[in-house]
Amino acid sequence: MTKKLLLLIALFCFTPLFAHECWVAAKKFVLQKGEIATLSLHVGENFEPEIWKGKIETLHYFNGKDKKDILHLLKDTATRIFDLPLENEGTQMVALHSKDNFIRLESAKFNSYLQEDGLLDVLEFRKQNNQIDSFGTELYQRCNKILLQVGNKKTATYKQKVGTRLEILPEQNPYNKPKKLQVKILFDNKPAAKILVVLWERINGKTLKTTQISDKNGLVNFVPTYQGNCMISTVKMVENDKETQLKSKAQWHSYWANLTFGM
Image (cartoon, rainbow, N blue to C red; front, top):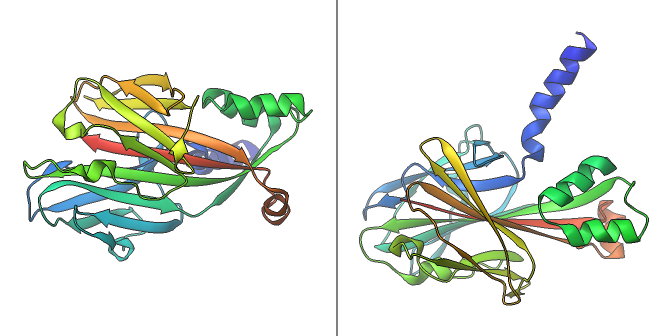
């Protein structure tokens, strides 16, 4: 096998690992009581899906009354597609929390990724501490949620906290289609200021992207079209303490939060 062919295979195999966005998708976002929701786990760039095969810490279903562990429903590890029998009527939620994963990138790639995802405080730290030419090492974790609408009744599950370190909380129910959708970003249960937040809308095979920076209260405002599937994403990176750095060989820890809904 030639070196060129080996390189092509390596690029094909590893590209999904470096795709920044990861989300929970639904075959249908708006359903009726008693229906079964077909959900799937994706990773990819530009809201274009590939199968996500990361390791899951927890997978929970919030039906408006109870919080249920549904990890056992994810039996198909090849496609990452699973069925969820829906209970009650109202706005409902599924939340996924992944296990930590380790990544090590050469300096140019790491710096470029920090720039692209708005992690400018980390980039500045590397500049100020003579680390700009050093490899980037990090643990990263997914904090994903999907909102489903069951029947006509709109309920407050959309704003329920799930307890991940980084969390996206809509201030209004997206299924009411508010003209202005305000979103709060929390980190360690506190408003996260000056964080890049992105609204992705997938409409007729094309992706629309809108970016905002959170204010001092962790708030951003979007004006969705509500014409297709939507995803809101953000990321926060912090330096690990010395003990964690020694144990994990990772200087940094990033948290990637995504919220999906659709019409």
